[in-house]
Image (cartoon, rainbow, N blue to C red; front, side, top):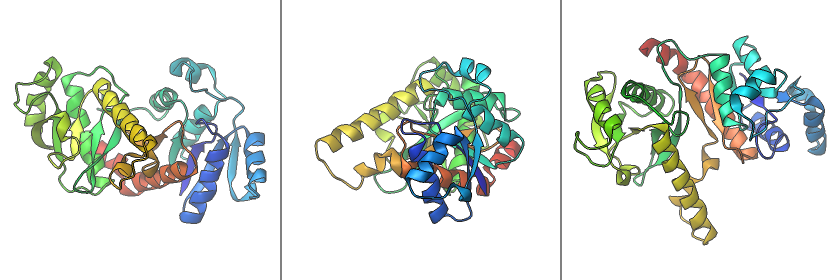
Length: 310
């Protein structure tokens, strides 16, 4: 399985990206990484690690989209960037999936400009894992791709999240809930109050009503839907909570489940090809897990399932 990687994406690129490629080849021999980036820099990394680059395909991309660049402008003007060239290969079916830990906005914009949204999907979305106290985990979406949403968009997120939970993570008939400030259907802001009836009437999901912030880590729901503004606040809060407690020297098996390194990245749901976005501080293990998630998305035929649903 040929999976592309933006080797220039991330705070520790390209070295950690190269390490991830080497690691995944050892763990999953059926995955063949294709690296996009400045070839001389990538080859130098392989040389430093004492590994021959002849076992990997490297596609030269002279330009790099930096973390702080304006996503749309960078995608439009840096045609020779690793992200743009990688997406061209994805569109041309030279690779089956693409992973990257660089500029998240550029990865999202690049996906919309190249592989495009699936017909019927208004807003592609990204998710985050919610570790459950009783074991297993749920899915939260959106977590930052769409700060402002309409009720019909949240309704679509519910379908996308449900399909993702079912076919990639093996959660049978996932329970879908709307994140709100009360369990009653009339609670919440205008968006929530308008979204609830649509979710309630949606026969393609197993809607269980509203949940509150205290329900994120229990078993009331497997898929929790919210706008990207709210979801990103939840995501960053959980991230900082984990880092703060670990800095205090607290060690706990459940707490460790909040470490993003355990998951690698998340799929962009609602576009025509598998694309996985990772954390900017990703290192070797995270890149390897991103490859594994991309493999799971391809093998689950998630994209086809979403197209059929919409």
